[in-house]
Image: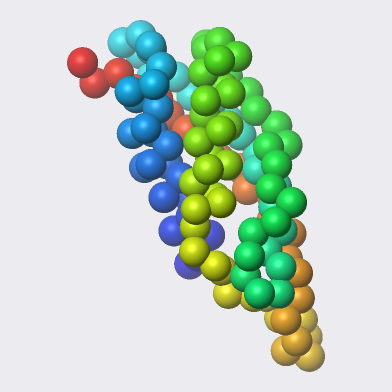
Length: 107
């Protein structure tokens, strides 16, 4: 549930913020990202990094803006619940989250 909320939050906030930041054409631009992070025992996000980014029809500046916004949004999320191991003790959990950000020009 938390992962789904995070994806929705990333897509809605990132797309709306970037619409005002980048000059894009009439067609949609798709930016594919893989984000890696660890949620530690207290629910805090650490070791956040963009592992991979790809955009066939946009410049590096646009990709960088998307990456920065994704990192900002993930850092701004409230604390997650901790993961538990088999004996119900809190543990650190690593995530690799694939994202597809679609930028559209609605003008």
